[in-house]
Image (tube, rainbow, N blue to C red; front, side):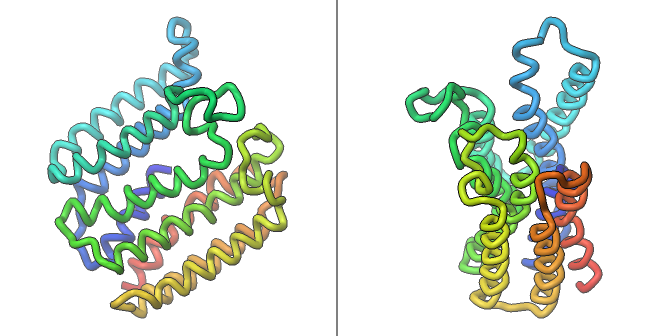
Length: 260
């Protein structure tokens, strides 16, 4: 996951002809590990903090090291980036910690992660602001139309990436989560994926500066992503989503580096 987010951030630097930014990339890497482990394991750790299993203690130590790495590189970021990141740090916090009134939810959960139908869009939003806006803000890049369109494309791409995961989790997720496949079915979910990828492709032509390398790269990544969406099903293999789909951002970066 962390490598995928770093790859998407690097893609942004390449798309806008920005120089390699080691500080931002390392920050994104460690921040992704910290945030992911916090969201995934907070609910487990808070109830078993006195008798943590060995594997969970190892994860906590690893997360602490990642947090220290994140903090170190955060101090090297531009002050505007730090202010900007504080907002999304709060979103991550609310994603795991139950603070909101229970009347806004369909079940007894009180964190953003359990709000019906919100999960996929929240994840996509965080990816957009981390992988598109953060590296540009840190270098004082002006937020113009091309940046906004790139953000929209990234939002669409992440939502489509999440579809195979949501199809896989149909047999595990509570119906109250209101995921896309739960609401409209697997067949219609795949159709939505196809339509979203088409929108992703055509948005490229609304940019002020269209580069041939970006168009070619988009065709490759859209075609590959479409394949994984269309062949996704509830009983997919262990590595289908967790490895192959999750590695698509890395493929995007590799193709862009090769063509660039």
